[in-house]
Each structure stands twice: as C-alpha cells, then as structure tokens.
Image (cartoon, rainbow, N blue to C red; front, side, top):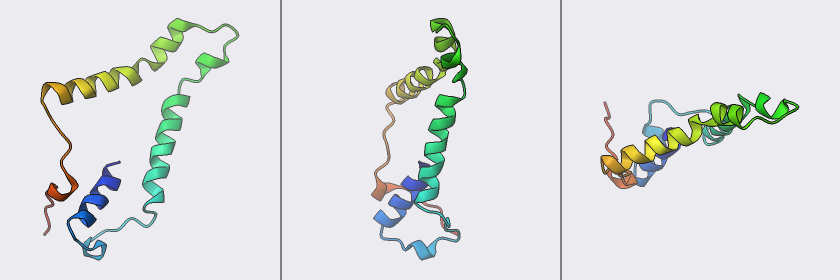
Length: 96
C-alpha cells in the first residue's frame, strides 16, 4: 500500500516517473498481488480451525484475535496522537 501511495503522491506533485532511480517492473499489478497474497495468508494461516469435526469458538478467537487487535491498536494510536494521512500534494520526498 505504501508503494501505491508513493507513486500517486509522486505523480500528484507533477513529477515524472522517469525521474525515479528505480521503477517496479510489475507496477501496479505487483503491489496489488502482494496485498492479495497477504490477505490470503492472513486468513488462511489458521484455517485448521474450520477443518476440525467440531467447531471451537475458543480456537477461532485465539487464532484470529490478532486481526481486530491490530485494527483497534492502529485506530487507537491514530486517535490518541491525532495523526492524519498526509495529502498527496504535501508528501515530502528526499531526492539526491
């Protein structure tokens, strides 16, 4: 997601993609494929919970509690520190 946003900000500031020292060969499909694979791995890593003959809510919660925990911590941090996304036109780039 960072790569997708970086490229959008780069173009939004009127910069040319040819100015980049490195350009991803598989953009935009590579980042989207990576996001998709991340979701598959995240949801499928503990799929054994669904393959047992008797469904266990305890195992389900224990295996998938990390997802809502991450979301709560992320949103809580953003709320506590009053952080906001930087506008694409205001992103700062360090160019050598």
